[in-house]
Amino acid sequence: MKQINKPARPVTYAWTAAAALAAAWAVVQFKTRQVERDNPPRGRFITVDGVRLHYLDQGEGEVVVLLHGNGVTVEDFRNSGLFDQLAASHRVIAFDRPGFGYSERPRSTIWTPSAQASLLGKALDQLGVQRAVVLAHSWATLVALAMARERPAQVAGLVLASGYYYPSVRLDVLTALPAVPLIGDLMRYTVSPLLGRLLWPLLVKRAFHPSPVPDSFRRLPPWMMLRPGQLRAEAAETAMMIPSAAALRKHYPELAMPVEIVTGAGDAIASAQHNSLRLGTDIAQAGLAMLPGAGHMIQHLSQQVLLQAVSHVSQALQAGRFSPLASAG
Image (cartoon, rainbow, N blue to C red; front, side):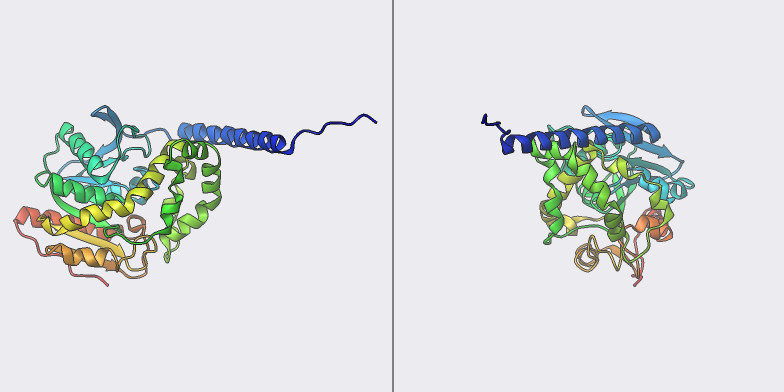
């Protein structure tokens, strides 16, 4: 009897895997084009050192600069209502940080907090901003602190919300694989966005815990955060978080401008006790507002506290003195 040769099993597995990756790639490409078509850039663009940045600019008066955290875009500030509330009495400039939203993130640069501080400081120069209060959330608090250290004349005051300031053991560094060349590139164009979409409800719930997720955050389309380019930026910043905090921590006592620290007592992303409470002691003139029952996403949960913090810093600058807000919590 003539023997029928069967295909080698490893070859079959390889073709199956390749077909699955091709299908995943097609889905990711479709969803990326769809979400960008449905959510085009709503701001302006500026090019700094060859990097194209997307930003929002609204209102008149004293300048407040908003810097969003890891995993979202500049639209998070608009959706929360904080952008428009500030713009009623200030000129508000909010950037998509490099690699997020519609801003570029060239691979030729390692986008540390210092590198981002330099780029955004130059962007403010081009926009004619000589002095501003910088309000930053989460990972971007490291960028704001680097800006304050390197450009103290431009950064007149800080409002730091839900920040990560001191190194700690973090399991989320294991999610930084999409930032690795080659294997990371393959993942973020295929399986990583699909896995991220599957886990999205759990990730959002953890970010807001112990608070419920408000409707204001649900207006941010998940696929904007799961596009391959943004996934690389998110993974890279996750990997840099611990060394970045370690490099900056020794400089906190050097800051001389008014600083307000706002945090949720129940923050499951950046422990208030490990981070904000310690920063409040390292910066002598800092005020601290710790909000009972609030999680990480303060801009959606406690806009009035952030508005009060900005107002307090502004009044102190105008009066030439600074008495920090009393701790709330």
